[in-house]
Image (cartoon, rainbow, N blue to C red; front, top):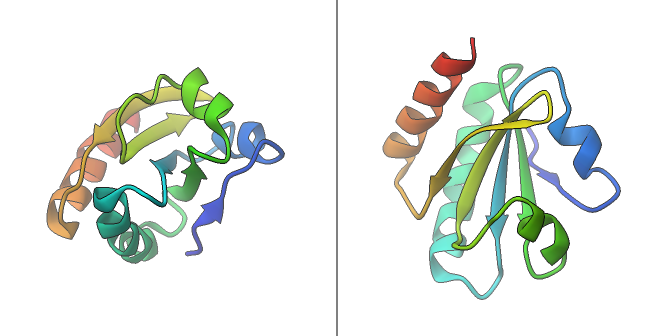
Length: 109
């Protein structure tokens, strides 16, 4: 599954999807963000049809990051039907990330 680049134009539509959406809030200068990026991409293929994946560059779209109270990055926010369900802050390996996502998705269903 492809990870969608989030912009001001597609943000509202994406987070209001009928399936949960996980948004990676990142910046190019952030070391932990750069380490998480390939893991986020890889994990996205495990959730096809269950979870949409998007990336938001907090430097390019600070208004969206600010509206979501993103104070520390990387910050993964899970939305369902337009509402924040949970968030994951900081770097983690693939196994921990999948475990965290699975716990959050279990709360939604």
